[in-house]
Length: 380
Image 1 (cartoon, rainbow, N blue to C red):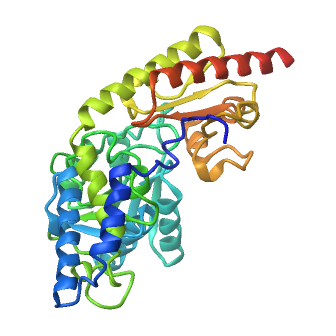
Image 2: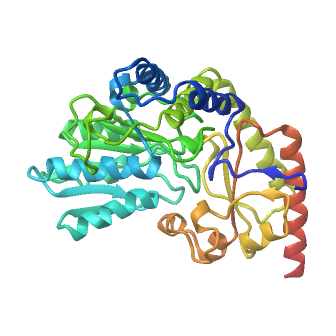
């Protein structure tokens, strides 16, 4: 395969070498069932619990507050549907935002079909949900508020601490989908004040098919899956020990260098934007630098098609929005909620960096994108 520059870390990340080694070791030496009482099973159990502690430490939680899942989608469904079922006698009103991932939006739509009421709050023009606006939607029968920590398309960071404070004052459960944020910025569930937090392994250098859900002690959550009593009775089924250990290893490694790496990626991101903006005057940046994930640059070249730009950049791998929308010419629901006009929305590129991104790659990518965009503008 020709040499390429990967700028799509928000879609998925490569699996770290140390994580691959962890998986191999678990497959070879710790393949027992953690529920078995014999030595092989208990060794697997020990490894599983060690991984749980690593994940917990990454977000400043207790190990018993971490449930392993199959990924972000299951974690989001477990949180939203679980709260709805557990607290439906108290109320049937819920709040979320219009910029959430489909794995959040669709469970809420499903609940509406079951008789729940849901308010979908719009962001401002930079893709941020204002807590004061959100608060106007609260009602006496509101039981859950779900707002993501960082948007997957724009990288916009949401004021989750303030939202958590407002929810706590009203006795409302607060869930945040942190799939795009965990491992990229320091996260402290105690500081945020959230009751539930979603983690997706393949966004932080672990394999696909593993994730986690933080459930604060004392939070009521009904099961959405039924079986035996694994994962503190919340997620039945034989535990995915290799995947869980992979996620734990990734969490351990990222926790050791998250601050330094966040700063490095911020500097590279800003260099990328500066190089692009110096040559292409039409460029539009959607989110201010200080309100965005350190690794994410969401820009637009109005009048052009983001898809066409990437088609002319075969060795630069990026996205025109969320990965699951790449084949659609429709404006993404996130940009639509932000009020972005159609030319700017269709000309969007999401350039997301990671721990393997180098300064040389950023310079090369900036030059190639610039050349391609200017050529397409010249064609009219």
